[in-house]
Image (cartoon, rainbow, N blue to C red; front, side, top):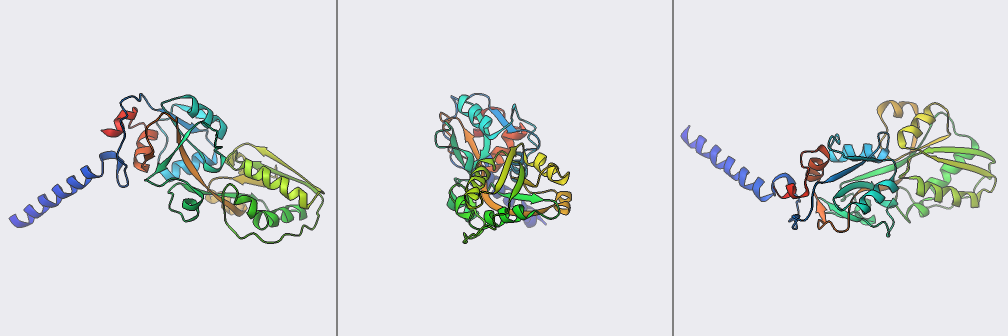
Length: 286
């Protein structure tokens, strides 16, 4: 019995040492922290309820976002606020962050988002862009979806990771109107796809209304649009009601002000910031 007790104590000591080496709240893959003494209280920025990016973030980081300070209504709003506030942290669709956005994109668990790390799944915060619809699509809707999942994959590859191979597309030139509603994160890519498709089919009249993923999916269920554009996984009831087609894979990127000395955070650290457990940048070193 005494020997067993000593082994237990020794095991506990080893575990404590391991946790210490992992850097406390940082956990596995924590990077050595730079000097954060010049940083103040963290300004935590989140997307609004209904946003597909917010839903994906909460799932991937395992946070309820109880510590948020400001709500941004769009990807652009997140970027503008983060670029203007030295102590801010936010998240945005990787493909929607222009080179001149004035923000720094951080690595997560030591892995930076890139076309390669998104394609091979090594970057930990990835999600799909999906088109969803109720019932049967019109001839124009089917023709457009065939384009998106085929020839359109070449255009997808310019900003996101394609989910299929580019194939030759010959439009059937279906005439009519097609309405799409949903995600602001996926909207720039969808706008480019619509414009390119209309070069194949000049008879098409396609409109895109930018709201958020939930609003788009709800509109499709209610018959208020032909296609919903979503940047989050669908809920069970949505999957029961809607047909879906993933057409691109993207990442949720962590953004901070360029003056922030950090280059990487772990998911555990991000959870602590967004849960409100840590409220100052210097707390990350605690």
